[in-house]
Image (cartoon, rainbow, N blue to C red; front, side, top):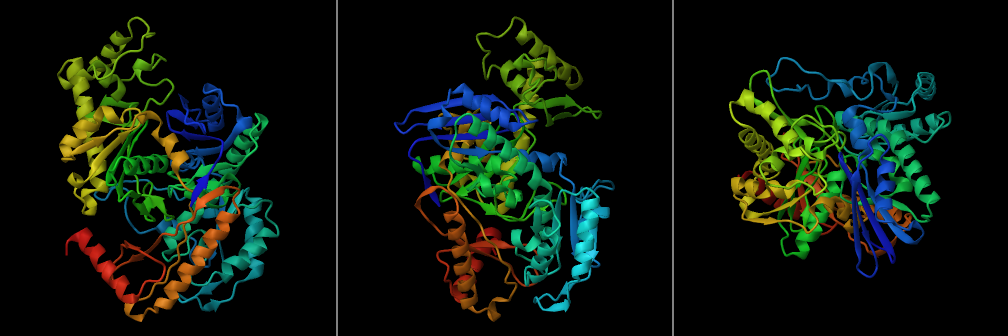
Length: 573
């Protein structure tokens, strides 16, 4: 759903190392800023970036913000204390998962559930798989459970009942009972966030949502307060992981959807730029200071998945741009391990102290230092005396164990990093049945263009597209993205027993919900577009294939034909 702003537009994206900003003015003037991220409070980095371009917030019409607040909280497990109310006998679903292991062939591993067992409380209730009631909801038990969770200090709560996607009445009733005593609005119903089968995935998604809701709400409130004090009078839009935007006033309700929103903004910028350049099929390659993100774009549409697992046993099954991440960024630290092997990343020097060449006290060699020593980039004119000597000394610490000189060590660091990044690109292309030779490589991020040609050569990609300002591409993505809302519902029925009218009704209802939601946001629109798809599988299979549709009124025969084509395209059988 396109948006329209008449005055100045600001796009600002917070990364692990830098906060990037682009300010677009009605006359076409563009101002750019890149400042260090302030990860303890990202709002300060946003304000620093606005200050760097001397933005007068009184005449700014729109601010679009990409934040890593929820992503960092999940990956670092700095979550709010959250409780779970669930079906009797099923409180361990979040811990049992899919009975997989952190390392498929390893004997050891660690796993910590999002919500600890003592904060997971069961209540009598049960639905059949078709939604019929087996055991009525015990209202008294729900109230008692909510009271225990409050007494335990929980700030948010998840209500997650078996088969609620088929019949949400028990979850809705329980949410009403909890709301009577809960001191805030941080109550997540599993079906409301993800109305599909698979109790583990729906439960984890809801648990992540509830665990980051208070954090995101506090951050957004703080940011809006700071902006308001400086004269900003309009709404702030926040990037979602699906590549769209949502009003800051609504974003915390479905906070899990903001996970991976930072990488998504760069992919949206790539899709927009590629389409304008006549290259609609792209592999995006975003190498920043902390990590590298890659994604696939076909026909100017980024691939979206609702089966993203951001770490072991933490699936977040809401629609998100399918981005794969590896810990190889410009600030990734290189070291030789106990076995004598060179390891690059995932530990990063960040913005402070940063790589040695940042001259902020960093002492560990990084990919950026290796690029500098190899002459692939130059020193700033104001660089302090002896800085290059310190970079050489840092890489000399790798050279000894590797049996080479500092230049050889730098070359080895680049080769190892490129191997990691090429592997990530294969994950979004070759592993999905896509030939990289049919795509162009869109390289951005502060370090992306430095490595793009080597990666394209290794993968056989014929073209490399580099934007004019690769270091602020993610901020540009915030500006060009549209408002977007995704809706999912499980049908769970064999195709030969399906009535197409049921599918038409679901799509019609979802379209109405989306339009009503968008109308509640205070943004002028240029148009509204509906995208329809179904997730399908052969009976007996586990994994789903996403099948795109031209309209919301497909026939059963069309569904079968499109699924068979999608299956052949993926597996060639």
